[in-house]
Length: 163
Image 1: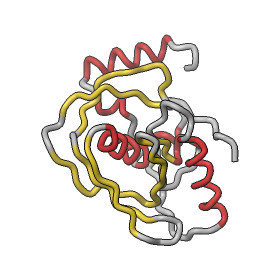
Image 2: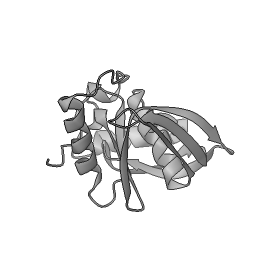
Image 3: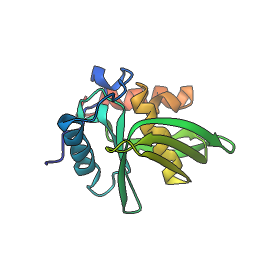
């Protein structure tokens, strides 16, 4: 399957909470293939289903060459002191700002066969788990920015060529 186009800031699908996946069928299997293909290009740590226009709870990840996916992920635990971490988003191209994230995170979901998937870790993995589950809840990393930085980011978006 080809890499799916990424939906950009302003697209309503990015602000709507995603629906749970109740039944795994050919459509869900195709969605997972598309998510895996779409996260593979260099520089991509994760792609959530809404970013490719699908309002379902699923995301793929690509952390240090470890590529995978999770269906119906739930961020069940975070720990450490929240701190600013440099972050960008495929749906907000060209921007990079410090978002407030926990240094450790844990997500639980399932795979296509219904087996439990547990993803947990620190650093980039923790950041990606928080970032992608935010997408599934209709949030963008912009929502995690301090107010003054968010105003600056919104100004940068308005001045961007893609908006």
